[in-house]
Amino acid sequence: MSASQPEVFTTHNIVVLGGLLLLAVFIGEVLIGPHHDQAPAVTAKVEDSVQDIAMRLKPVVTLAQIRSNMSAAAGAADSASKTPEQLYQGACMACHSTGAAGAPKLGDSGAWGPRLAKGIDALLNSATGGIGAMPPRGGSQYSDEQIRSVIEYMASKAE
Image 1: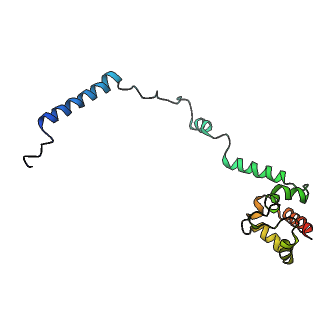
Image 2 (image 1 turned 90 degrees about the vertical axis):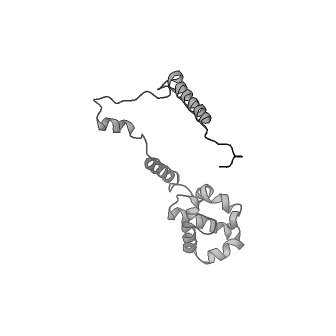
Image 3 (image 1 turned 60 degrees about the horizontal axis):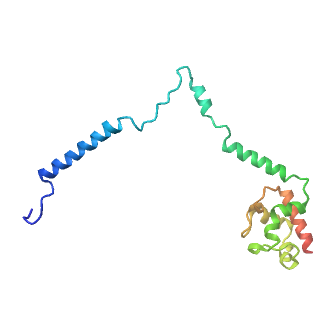
């Protein structure tokens, strides 16, 4: 070390740091208290069995049950009693009434002509599998028969 550089760890510095450390320990132990921020311990009753504890921790409803109920509700809402026009309004109208993302508009024979030339089965395959920006089944839970009826409804409007 050169003479122009001050020494960092002199005995004076060590004594000051030690004093500060003792002061911090004193404040922490005496003034604040050793158990100031600890939460009270929660203990189970001795007579509680593992099954009792597991029963209390069991969720009321699981995600699988919620999904199952939603699928059942969607299936009930899309029952076979709905007309093809109601099905169209439920899932297809948003894109096929505006032509969003290149969807052929309802009643546009120019846009539907080449598609109808391929046949209803080809349109059904495209609708159930998704095509372009259209998700499979148009984002609905419709059955193949319901989708076929909507395609036939839209095709009848294009003729």
